[in-house]
Image (cartoon, rainbow, N blue to C red; front, side, top):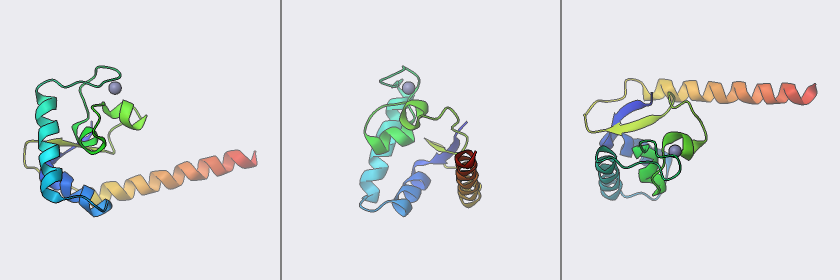
Length: 113
Ligand SMILES: [Zn+2]
């Protein structure tokens, strides 16, 4: 399962990692997408419930897997209505970094075989 974050917290993360977003607009888009999801919006490709956080950013209604090509969303976030701060955004990012590095190492090793 993706980590649930509030629309505000997610907007904060997006703004931190990307330039050129307007906070108010971003929050409005996130809220509208979340509302659509709750009203039953489904992935254009496979028909699964949409990944609201990702769909709001890309502007296309897709599920997590069709957006990212990954089946495992446990390292990612999904926006929710409830105001609950992510327990450890920093920790999760660190874990992601480590995993990326591990992946690279594996690829390097493969190259030498
Ligand atoms: Zn899909």
